[in-house]
Image (tube, rainbow, N blue to C red):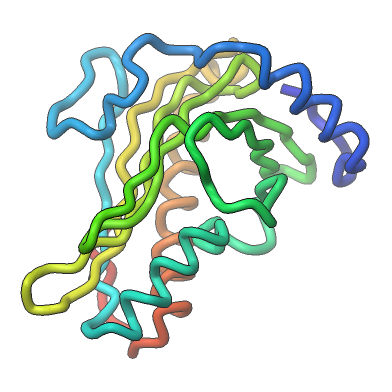
Amino acid sequence: MPVYLTVPTPTRIEAFLRDEEKLSCTYEAVGISRQDKSLPGFDNDHSHITLGQGELVWERACIAIREWAHFPFGWTRIVPAEEEPREGQTVAVLIHLFGLWWLNSARVVYTIEEKNRFGFAYGTLPGHVEIVEEAFWGQRDADGVVSYHIKAFSKPRMWLTKIGYPVVRMCQKRFVRHSMRQMHRIAGVEKQKLAV
């Protein structure tokens, strides 16, 4: 998990990804977020927001997830963002916090492509400060109401995240709030209360 004062160069990110793609996820229960159960020893979170209703809202939500646009602009970046999530894909997750750029790695562990559910989950690799599996998906009910979900199982991995875990949890909650707001804006619906 390299840390930089400025955004790392594409060359550094590519080298980081080449090393990380050879490695396995940092936890055993890969794919756990598919199941409707908790994982002992992890923080278990599931947040959601209603985006609106109808085909246009559904299409916008699916496109946003496909293009990684649910990651909050300004302080998070995915590399390569131009590739849509596919199972087995290794990505760099750049996070800008406390004036530093934190370079983390993750692998897409599954995708969801159903008539009324679309999304994916990724799991952390050794180049990540935490142990996490996180799923992001859009869902449409029988009445055409579209919702956006984030489900995560997480725990600290490195000494820094263990010592500062209250700050880590604060950052996780900030990510969820910002992602929900961003999806809300992308869907193009009026402001509503977030069910986070």
